[in-house]
Image (cartoon, rainbow, N blue to C red; front, side, top):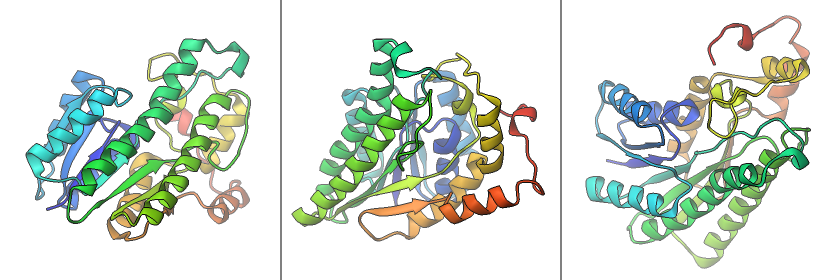
Length: 271
């Protein structure tokens, strides 16, 4: 029976991925920082009738000790880790770079970039001890493709760096003959509380109306995206895989048909 560990998985895309893999019969290890949400998420996952078991670790994935503790827990309970997903992340306050406090910069880079880097490194070390190796996935975001917008410079910088890191890590794995593989998940624009909350807090981001219009055209709820990603992750056998939901062709089609398929996620009050 296979095991998947997903950081930042008590809500949003991470939680929806956990549900998908739970239904596939995986052992699941979830992670989050809010204790109440963590317990509620565990209960909801365990209520899904499927093979495998569910456990979790409550603590920030930005701390190396916590990553090691997650690995130790997964291995002690399930024997090995087949898939590791660095999903934990936060959004930035919608301000230009020079208005961000140093503490805000540090907080975002620690969770959106450093946590994924350390998660990849430490998961790789564990997977090297396993006869079957394993798969690591990092989650791309705005900026991974060099897109730029005022108010998303810091977040975009972290995601562009993460894309480079993941592709270079894949090259290093290949050249070293490693049995571990790494890839990228590109979920596109998802409509969650991440969209309107900064740095994992309750601080609301005031999105410009222009940005809302784009999100309404290109956005999706995380359960839809997770179902697509999980199926392809389960099937993937390649190193440096890029599993992409919102392709350029799909985005172009949505803009072309936006007049006939109007949506307003922000009026639905589901964030």
